[in-house]
Length: 584
Image (cartoon, rainbow, N blue to C red; front, top):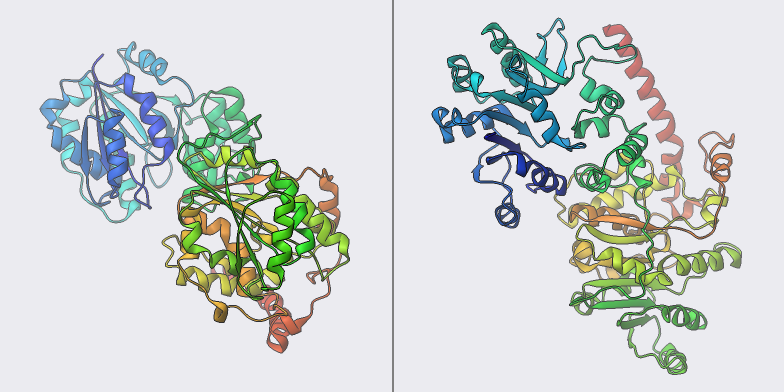
């Protein structure tokens, strides 16, 4: 069989996602020719990769005018309708779905063997008051008898560049099926939803509202938007895809983390570091730096002992706050036969600013580990000790495995899981976090980030507690490029909503802006989720469960915010609900 694929691509960040490469790799053997039509300005690197991997035979770069239907029209016009008739079938498809979950060849052979079927697709929508029954346009395959018809040519030749997607749906997606049916052609779908039970569904669109049925009926593609729209069951969808198919679920996690928020709850279970038996990570040309901020010299030996776990070469940079500590640090280093460059950075910015001041040195490295001699003055010594020791267990001792994971192209950051102290004590509170959000938004703007995010609209943040972290320098480059100085950081005692707290919470999102995903190193301390459940469900209303010193949280203004924000949101919600009832 001679087959043609007209494949439409769109990515709001002008990239070709890994799931698209995988998709085209799977589809390539089925088609004699693939025309790749991009409605976004893809990078030269992606274009060349598509060419080198022979994932396309011809290419069209266009603006996203008229969406996918206008793109398919342009593809047909480029090739010529007479050229289309040379193929046994012509398939139109876009990249709005993951898959194929099962071998697509079997589906083609099935429908090609039935002469009564003139065109076919994956799923259909039943007739409603708004539109007629039709095949959903993310995948439709037309046999030669259809392509040769004047009705086919006239339909596609008349497609206009609508700017409203609703117009495209009403004029084209719903009409391509009815137009061909009126001309006497017949269609079939892998999953015919017309007679399916829609009890409990908001709309009879199974591809969007009922992804479970999509899997149960072995539809080989699942819509990207179905994963995002059904986050409450998405962990189970991913598990089912993993159980019943050979499709790499990691591709779904990667794409959803990049085009959506990287910390969506349904994705976090997939972000744990894959521990392997790596004795030494493969570092062909990569250079590794370790930055350790030593405020408490008495803890230096504990870190140097942990560094012995490293089986790779690295350069150690030690920063400290006082010149007087240099000699003591040198003595400890000598006892461990450890070389290091020691830099005095002053007692401001805690461990974060000293790291950023090493921009010139660290920018020469591919991978960087950042740690500091953590103690806690705010609580009993057990808090700081447990926090520090657990972070060492999570991020320093398994460094070989961590660097092996960082070698993956899309991974840019590895953080620690939540230390046990924060699971026994409700310290990180949504009210407190909300006070840090303005500083986060401000830094986001100063870094000139291209991705849009509003931290004030978020309840809490995924972060590496204490800023212990491994990262690719490029993943955090915008932060280093801020060139922060001592004047940008408040003096001690540090306010709770300071720029340093904002940076601690921003790392994951900075990497996300750079199109890197993150992974979480699991805490070896096993705690029952019942602990979290009991802590989060204590009957204390919306008040934080720890003492709040407003001296360090905006003073009177901070206290007023605490009092006003909650009731104001409640009133806004009530008004919105009442307005909705009145309008209905």
